[in-house]
Length: 225
Image (cartoon, rainbow, N blue to C red; front, side):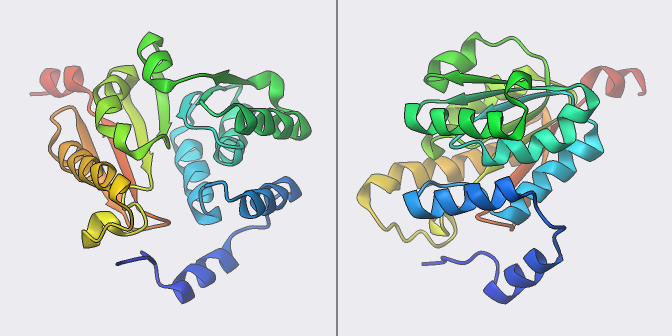
């Protein structure tokens, strides 16, 4: 089974080049490690920040908050521009922890934290958003794809996290039977985003695999023909 998408020495080198993080990030990393809560790697957090920063994103939707680690990375780029973030989390204790960290960071009033099932909440949203970060149950990515594209404004970015699922998507070796369906659906997600007519996608082997899609501006494409 492929467990390290990026060679450990490469990962260590990249992390060593990252700018110093605010103390709150180290605190969150420690809590996630102690409580075995999945959060993005620091280099993935920096990538999210960079994408939102270069895009000058101001309206963000995050699907899967956990304890708010990725949210705060994105917030560093979005909030100074007067932007807003809506983040969805189904797990009450994790949402409570996220709210605590948002308050500690002084940004709780600028982040809308919604507790509930994304399978219901997502389809009630109207958008548009210029940045969507998808980090929910991996087996739901395909189910959420078309709605995420609908919610994106032209030129907007959709980032899907953990698309290699600890390497199982690549190797086909499943560690537990219950993960078989999720792996199959992640493979379907990657095939769909690469072939979808409304978006352009690149898959980046960083962290546990990131799929970055941008919504095409069909109107301008037609007008420029």
